[in-house]
Length: 414
Image 1: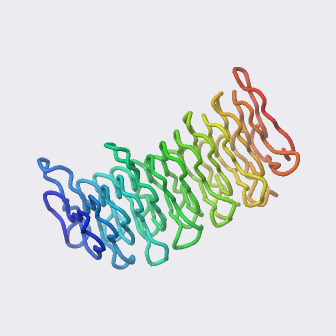
Image 2: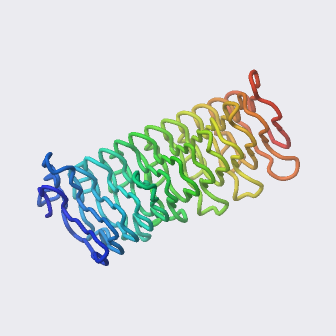
Image 3: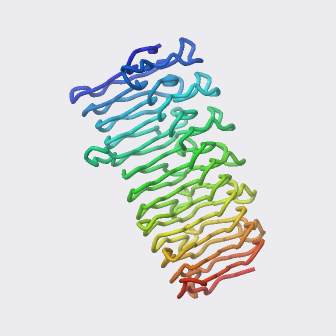
């Protein structure tokens, strides 16, 4: 039990602070891991973190297998904070809940706060290393640049975490700020979609994943807005994924193991906004359905919403590229505004089950374009979409103000 200290529970700092392991502790709770005994509660000292790793400390490990991880909860700052540290790992812990993994004992900051700390690994692959980051007063995981000099947290990897759920993975224990925030740092969220690897990011009070002013983010193999089994809704209160002013990011991939299930969220499944949100790709995902590709777990706004950005790719020309965008409350895909140009929507099933043989319609249009220009829906050669079963139009195009040059060809509609 490491609790009730004036500042941090554990502080690992300096260039010589390497290869330490913190395992099997209660940090910020009582001796039973059930109620808060905060580190850093003295107002005249400042917010204390459960664990702080700082100033070139490297190759340290916080946690172990799930049976011997730490409970890091109830602290006045973050559960774990990394500041200008390199190549550290955090896995197998409970961060923000009690020792049972069920009740919230929140850290007052982020669950894990990574600032200017490249090469950080949050989570470890394998069924014995599940980590729960839930119930915290800010984000579950916050990956950001230094505000002083812009140093990023490049090469951060998140795998095998429940972010916003209880330990069982069937109930929301949301982080108040959202699930994962990526600010200006190249990060990979997820790996191949299988047990012991995927992140489940659900039940959070904000967006599941926020990407802000970042390039080259990969979001692959996750469940976002569902239970851990992907069979029922456990939606984030905002969008599943919100990309703002961020370019060249990949949501899903052509390999079926990279598929995200993005369903059950109160906003859109994927939202892309901001004038610099160019060259993003959305491939191979289930957006609005359960993991079986049959049962509807619709996002409560659009499947995909794009308000600004050039050259977004939704789908592609191979079977692996295909998104299934179905069962959402509003439109399957909605392109809105003159800032949306050169989008390619190809090879998708929009309004059907994953088999393409039965309806699972969106509540609005399959695809809706308003004042967007030079976008292509389908192809005469490869990349035709199946757009069927939707409550309103298969494809609606309105250009009352600025839209022009949109191409609709080669699709199966209705």
